[in-house]
Amino acid sequence: MARVVIHKEKGPMEIKVGKETKAICMCGLSKNKPFCDGSHNQTLDEQEGKIYKYDNNGKRTEVKNF
Image (cartoon, rainbow, N blue to C red; front, side):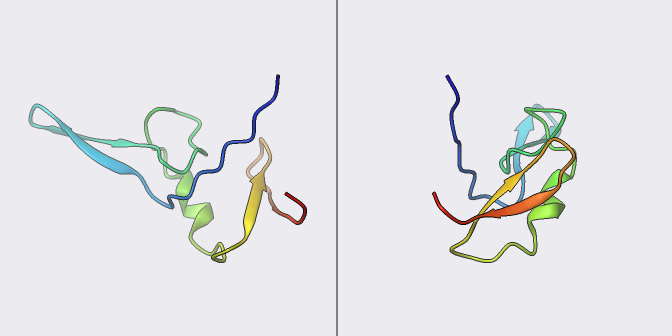
């Protein structure tokens, strides 16, 4: 069964683990989940109110009919 998951965040969530800070992926694009790898930088120019799909290579297309 396939699922469509919509991520609205454009950056990571930072959490503290002891004295260390970790960045958790919130955009859904990291190849190192659950940790952030900087892939959210691809989302910075997304337009509000639009839905985008990213393929495995990071190529973005707008979803017209959802």
